Length: 335
Image (cartoon, rainbow, N blue to C red):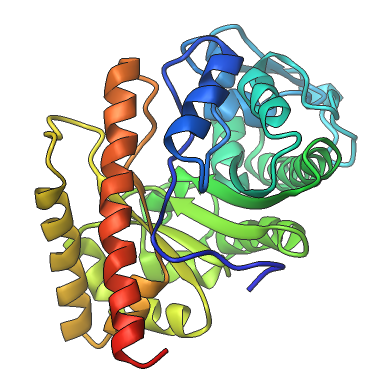
């Protein structure tokens, strides 16, 4: 693992919140999930706080429009160029900056998000850039941004232990016809990003729902965000090896689409049911629980603040049950 480990039974979130004020967003997440708060992104404040807009910000030859879309000046594009805005002080990072200010004197864990190189490369290619150049540029840009993020956390919040999750929704499309990046190259791109982060942070990967979990694990994360769904059962052997090596799984156990309800019981039964299937497929039951986190399945930017609070509290409730069960298993094993 990285420079530190995680306590069992923690809750966190993806990061996207409905707020428009960065200070209020930071206070909100610190109040609801103080154990592992996620740096907020605030797309309701500005479309520039969306995933791709953040990732493409400050890249020579790439203009991020007010609606978050991209336009290109191909003659100005250079994968070797330094990013503008090295302090990440531009409009796409208002939520991030508000969070850094809020945790400046805080010790303990904090989670940060970073758009991955596959997703940025696909967006650049969709905007009209040559695929090979888009891939090279995306890998260089995300690597630079990872270093800048780590440097900023170290300087602004030196007592914080950073968990950095690479957000890669495009992993779900790797096997689709016409996907512009070969599978091996795509996995190497993500691995390179994780390698930049790993000396300092605990590294995570959040692939898109429907991704091949076995392929996602090949990139080498220390933490995998996975759906609390039977779709993961086919990867039971790979997950078990990952856990045996000390990896962690953040289970997306709280739905963020459709009605959720107010009771933790159904969510806990659903997650436990997935674990039972994994155990029947060969996964170790103790590690599944002891090396697990809980979070809502998606961002909360389209929710009202009260709904976002309810989703975080449901994740907290599931995590408390997880902690109790993981602790009970350790005690029964004589740990």
